[in-house]
Amino acid sequence: MISYNTVKNKASCEFTEKRSKFIGYINPVESEDEAIDFIKKIKSEHWNAKHNAYAYSIKENSISRFSDDGEPQGTAGMPIMEIINKNELTNVVIVVTRYFGGILLGTGGLVRCYSYAAKLAINSSTIIKKSFCKNFKLNCSYDSYGKITSSILSHKGVIKNVNYSDSVKIIFYIESDKFSSLKDSLNDITCGNLDIIFLEESFEII
Image (cartoon, rainbow, N blue to C red):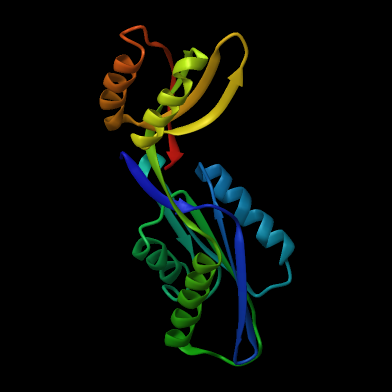
């Protein structure tokens, strides 16, 4: 996987349907353990709720899990998971809390409400794309600094940090498949005296 979509931040929403209150929560996660911890936190906060249905998708090992948490089978967890899949999201967990209002919604009504809560939660956050990138530290002179930063940015690289001392030290990342072209450009700017160190590979926001 060279890129994936997830959400930028935790968000929540709520609505009422026939006196039942539904609260949807969404949160970005990096592992199954983080997803489970988030689910436990929501369940602890809403210990008196009738149901805390959930679904999550994790990039590592392609993990996808869901739970109806006491609702009729297939009416809560699966609809939430289908909304996650429809939006092509991963590294994300959604929990939908339901406070029962005394009126039965039927299987169709439950599917619609849990799906709607998941949609609202996603809409309340921000979808972002993360791409597989190479991270570098580059040293350059003040004379070449402007041209180098311009080249990094024009190749869709992202500058994370700049330190000014006897020379300029730039930490940046760029999508792996774009680095070769950037390297050629930087070599031209520095006349072949490119001072660059590879740091790590990671998924970053582009």
